[in-house]
Length: 585
Image (cartoon, rainbow, N blue to C red; front, side, top):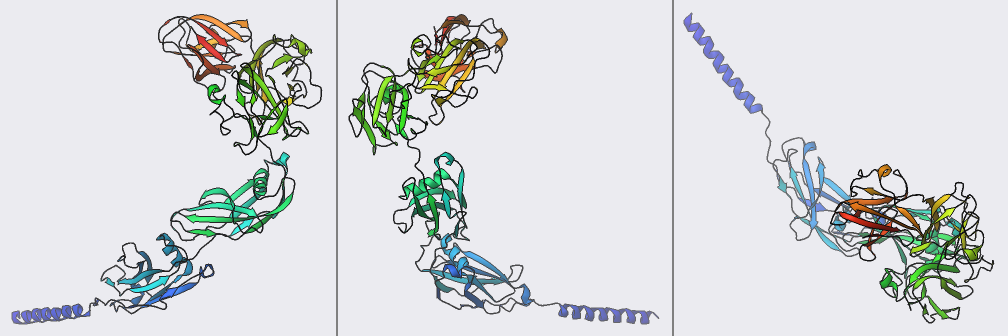
């Protein structure tokens, strides 16, 4: 029995051994395969934009004979500029197929990303790396060469309007929108776009340009912007003509493409003309560089009917003997001088006698000019001058702290009022020498009209501060605020709670816009001036400019606090609103 059991055990062991051997023999065998041989159906190709989406070259290769399902074979098509040994290769992955192709746009993008010149043939090296799907057993094929000529791949430009009518009064309104597709599709870098334009038929020999920027595909244009393109293309204001537009696209590597051309018929208008006052006074008065139109102050346009683009004026301080001229635009191409009240193109320099604030007016239609004292005063039933201009100056004058800026305080009763720059009413002549009075039907902060309606009536008698503000020549406006008090607030006043308007000391009003007070100031602290007993009232801060020793310019919009002196002690503070200065002695 023992022998029988031993025999059966031995037979089972042998049987198991043979079975194991058969299972090892049945395991799949993965061969190493072989490198493929690559061929191309072309050796050179010159694609065009029409070939962008069309396969222009195809590549095929032999079977690598890996011992696995051919649907999992992995191939990497590698492309680089000839002779670089694929150090900057571009690749395309193919799974399970023995061929692939490239469209005109794919080839073009490869060459553009290498920075190759458009229209010039360039040779590429192409090869295939084969492997199992898990990247094992990689083999590199032979290298074939392909000569390719990159092409311009421009945007497609469209215009929302093919005809526009423009007007000065609606110049800020939307007029047209240009849109375009991206240029150089597939290019990896940034593409910069500009709109070029010229009058129809000139073939962009000397085009004007509107800079757009990188990777932007639309441009909305106002009537004023469209008008500028018409004028720059030689269509005079008030005439109709046709302007052609196109997109110039430039890659970061220097390739350039031009889009199709679109046409817009434009009825133009005469634009706003701007005039400036360059002269030998500029540097000394903080108005830019001497005789430099680019930094000279701008004249205000008189917007009254019939005077637009003809009548201009400015209120400005000039040193004794100052000489100057008037330029149209910020260069010398069109300039005016003159003598005896006659305005002359390229004429003699204008000049003034003593130093002071002057009002300078020109009329380019009548070819006349006027230079006289520049001043501004209160007039009207609410003022001490009444409606009698000869009573205005000097008692009810405003101060002139800056070009096209007047500030003044006066006592008002409950009645109407205006601001006026002469001691007589205007005579309706609309000439350069006539008086300009100013009013507005709107509240404080509104635009003023020359010789227009009165300002809104004063409804509560008292002292008020009026500001005639023409620093923005596009919108001369006025401000009116109570001037019953002026307080010194801050953390630099000894014995006074810091930054508490209600308990801060009040200054004494001495007339003519001048306030004074004597205080003990704490060294190296901050103060400012507040025209009320609570925050939100009109205030003055540091303009950052020195006028005289211990004197600083003031401002009422967004300045820094004033710094107290470096030594604690008693100081007399003088705030002069007419000259817009503060003195601490």
